[in-house]
Length: 617
Image (cartoon, rainbow, N blue to C red):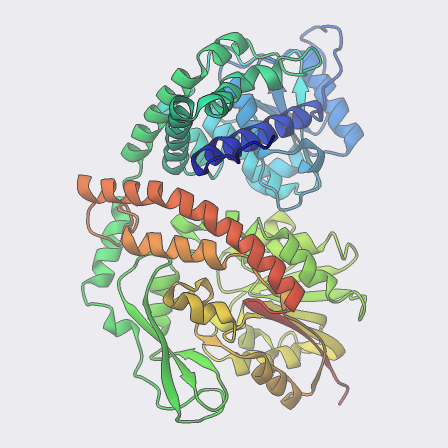
């Protein structure tokens, strides 16, 4: 006897059940991987503080001396410089939230991973506090401030930060699970409270719908969600014993709904733009945006041909700032370039609040999730050299250099960039020396000093990429290597997605050079290309980026300081578009996974890498 297949509707319940089951198992495994401080007998309050350590706690949290000493001993034994202490009675939903964000088995060794914790107590060496510019003698932080501090401190101890359960530590009382306090805590962790609240409410609505309409499959999915706190945290071997476990399990749907609504309301109230920043943008825009563009160029900046045609016209879909931009393509060499290009004043305007300022935190989060790409870039050099000195041009905040140390631990990494982030990279120890300014201006001072120069997604941002290649040739010692990664304007996805292809990245990308053009330019400067990669350089964001750019185009952030004042209508529209985009993002992520697999197999994607050796004169 055969059974009929699941209907299309019931597949929703099956997928939800599988996803919730996988999440429950993953959380339980991560919970078991949490280290636990040894329980030591209570000691007198007069025990001397171990030299070099400070314990920062939120208000109402009072660790006993035994917990402090056990934490110091554990951190020193493990070679840690930052240790977040989890109270044994950590609230159930907070524990589940932390386990969604952190894999304890990988947390310490993930040099780019964001600092995470419970927000109650963190042990830090005085050396790290000093480099991070943190005064441990100030007023006690609230949980949101301590979460933000933990996130920051991991940047200064990227491979020496850990978590541990402290059996003798208590939360100090009930903790608000929603509202302004929770919204502040999510922001402190670099998480968007409005989007997360919308996803939470949308998920609850979906679960309620399948439970009512889809029989036992829907009831099973809803029941698994309901019981998840107990299934993860209720075992006898759990290192965490939430005081609210029974209540959190019994009332989970109601509590989750209430917390989501309160957090959504709080996020809406707190998203208003900074008044001074908004006033500065109004002043800049008073004269229009045409002044940010030069006159149109009649010929190709790469080969001089006058055979130009429009490849794409697109507004600023990255930030939603006013303006419209044109990319033209050369009919002879295939070079794609912004025409007319931005003036230096225009570059400052459109870069502002993207990598630094209000957008710096989001950009840092994105860069911190590119660990696999950074490793691939670093490993490309393995068959060819064992460098002592490496200059990363366009280093930003130094994420590549930090990650590449896992591949090249004995290499000195220096960084160069126009932005202030290079100074942060130097303070964190992600680069040894940070140079702030234009690369061609530094080239005479750095001539012949480096064995490797890298330019990863840098040349496309420059006004004159050929001058940048000249600078690299000057800085490299004979026999040194130049590593370059660029978007590939010949990618099939560029034509399929049109203006929504993320690597157009307007208005920031000034030039997109086909690989053949770059190979020829390198040969003209005395380089020999020794390796070229297309598939491995692919960045799996074509469809996801297209959804994000389209959502921005349909409903820009109503609270952007360069936009008109937000109204109820614009806020409601933005909220509706974000909610409607959630399933689109899920589908896009699945398509990007398939696209990445195809790109790896066919050695063709949306980017390429070249490694070239500077030949001896």
